[in-house]
Length: 193
Image (cartoon, rainbow, N blue to C red; front, side, top):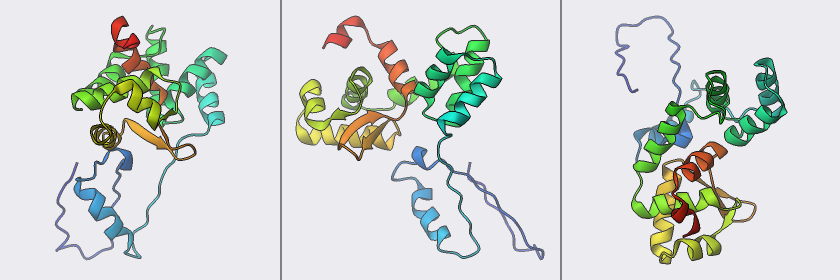
């Protein structure tokens, strides 16, 4: 949330802490322009947090009583995203054998619902493919023109659903959770199309 702060009467040093998920900011978000400007100020310190390493995720799952299968499931779904690590563990402890809580499923489906029909089709195709999926193969599967496909990919990337694998210039979903939720929502006929 953005909040305005009036510091005009403050005479003592002030520490302001702000957080932002850069992967959740689309290109038009005001923070996309503001963060680089703030970083130029010597008084501003930024700390970028990457994903948790696999060993750390394994330790968390084991402390919660998880076995090898649960470690693999949590790692595959999360890729080290701390929020996603915690959610499947909570879902399993509440009886969801697949580790998908309604809240987590709703977050993914809500993000998907905000996309255009073609971008949804691209995300669905990626959820079924062996990731990463080469551009040419994705174009063949989706059956869209080049400009439309690129626009749909950019839309899905800006919604933090699709990422580009720079090693092979191909696409994949941001994490396994998205793949599992999206693929799980498809009808049998949609899986074959």
